[in-house]
Length: 349
Image 1 (cartoon, helix red, strand yellow):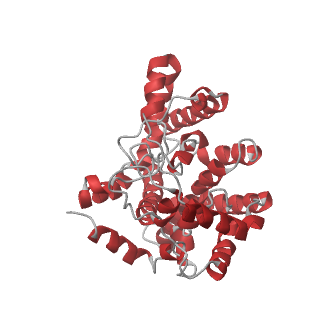
Image 2 (cartoon, helix red, strand yellow):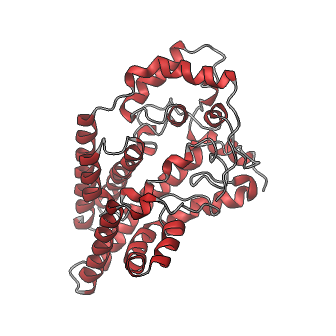
Image 3 (cartoon, rainbow, N blue to C red):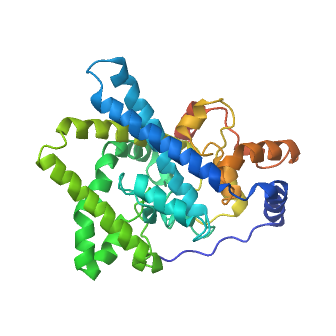
C-alpha cells in the first residue's frame, strides 16, 4: 500500500515534543524487574480466578465474581504485548519468550501478531488507510462504531480458528502464506483497508515458532474436547471470560482517540497527540479498564517508548511544568462515558 508523505512538523510541534521529552527523559528506561513481577502476579491471578470459575458451584457468589477477576487479569496480561512492541528489538528477549509461553500462545495472540503496531504511530500512516488501529468513523458514522463494539462477540473464536486452520495452510503454500500474513496476521486490525506488508517479520524464525506452537495448542484443545477431557461447559466459561475482557478493550479503544482525522490524510506529530485522550482522573477504576498506562494514551503517542510504570509520574510532571497553553493539557477528558458520548455526538448517523 502506498503511504503519502507526512506533513512537515511545524516549529511549534517540534518545540513541544522536545520540551516534553526533556522533562521526562530520566523516566524513559524500563525497569525489567517491575515488568516481571507485575506480569507473573497478573497471570497467576488470571489463571487462578479462571480455575475457581470452572469449579465454582452454579449460581454462587464465586461463579459471579471469578469470571470478572479472571477477565480483568487476563486483559492486563494480554496488554503486555503492547509494551513488548515498543521495546527495542532484542532488549526484552527473555520476557517476550516468557510472555508468549504463558500468555501469547495459550490465548492465541502471540507477539508476532502485534509486530505492526508501530505503524499506528508513524506520521505517514496515522489516521489513514495504512493505519491498522484507527477507526475511520467518518466513513460510516455511528453504524461503524456499533459494528466495532459488536466484534467482541466473535473475537474470542478468531484467534483459535486462525491458528487451527490458517497456520497449516500457510505452512504448505507460500502463496497462501502471503495472503494469510497480509490479511489475517494483525492482532488488532480495526481498519478494513489495511494490509500488513509481507516483510522480514513474515519470514522470521520466531514468527514460525510462534505459529506452530499456537496451532499445536489449538489442535490439542480440539483433541481434549473430542475425547471429553475438556467439557463444553469449560469452553463456554472460557468464552465468557474472553468476551468480558475483549468488550472492555473495545470500549477502551473507542475512547483512546477522538478519530477526528476525517480526511484520512497524514497529520503532524502534534496533531496525532491532539487526536488522543488522557484519563488522569478516576482513582483505581481507569487502571482496570485501561491497564498498563493506557489511560495516558496521549502521553503514549507523544513519547511511545515511555514505559508504562513511568506514565503516572511523567504525566504529573508535564502537567506541573508545561505552560498553561500546552496542547497536552487539551487531551484531558473528565471520564470515559462523557468522552464516548462526545465522540458519538460528533458523528453523522
